Length: 190
Image 1: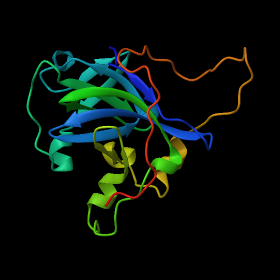
Image 2: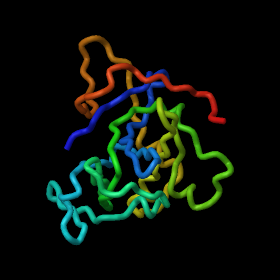
Image 3: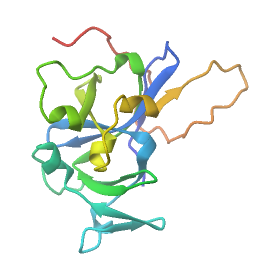
Image 4: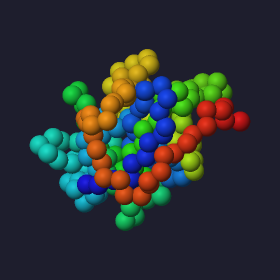
């Protein structure tokens, strides 16, 4: 279980949300990473679709169908994301895991007003990455839990100013592919 890379944006406000970004079909989907429990190969699922990992069962859900996105199907890059909280857990397939990304809260945009239907339940908003737009999946909707207003606020990470020699207690994932800081525009998408 490993990730291809981790990137961070330059933080000015001291608050960010950490996402696991994955591809489903041609869409980049971002999942608040706080509830990601693991990433496993599809062979880890039993014949009934159930994944048991670290003493916990993850019922399989077809997230691509629920999101109304056509998946590219099984490939060597396909992974199962194990996702959950203390109330419920699920596993779902993604076409490719891109990695972790810390996004400054100010760079996360709500869905534009033309989105008025059920997509407002499925998606919390979006952010612009260096090569694409990532849609933010509503973690409560993913887990089929009662929806909550302002759901992203509970996943915010606050970065305090640290003095030289102080340690960072956040989750550390090996950085494999990205060495530079990613700069993101705050201008609206046209």
